[in-house]
Image (cartoon, rainbow, N blue to C red; front, side, top):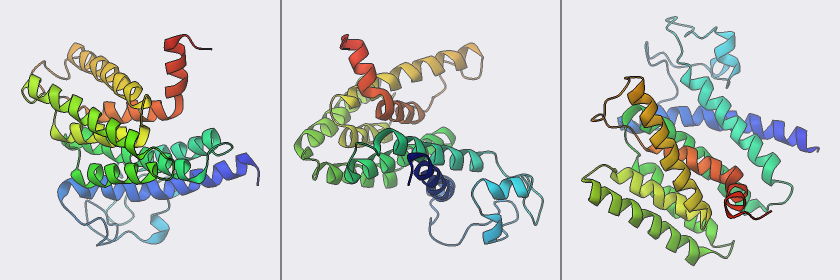
Length: 252
């Protein structure tokens, strides 16, 4: 099978997983089960039929509205599906030709978890323990067959400690969820990609914060979720972290 054909399959798989992530993003912060009941319209609560739950296609066929109550379907659903599909296809193209299965699966899982974190924190300003705790464990487990358990453990502890110190010094400016997310990123990314991801997160967060204040969408006293910046930094580090590091250090 050609790389292009397998990338298309990775995209399709990603959209399916993205459909599940939509369930996670909606239900997890509300304390609802992500298993039962099945998907239903958030407006009229009518169960969604399988034919109306095809990633990306169903929202186009339904013209962006629920078949039963005609309420609009949030743009968030196809966006998450497309983002998840695009990430998996990009990971396959970028890493499949040279990477073993363990780091490939680990990278895919890490990236999809960051998608969920991005949208949950954006909406609810929380980073759920139900993602970071299993994510931290998964990152360390994936590190074992790669022969880097101890370094990953140290980087995870170090990243969490840095964010804990920031939280203590700032008097709560950094949330507990961000601390755990930083540790999870350390477990998956290791050193020095974790440093790249966190630096990118701080740069992104500062830029977004300044823009929101300049546009009067937020005031200096309003909290701005940092999880989306961490998630963005993590994804960028996955694809371009090594290249950015070589550029910064002047290594060809």
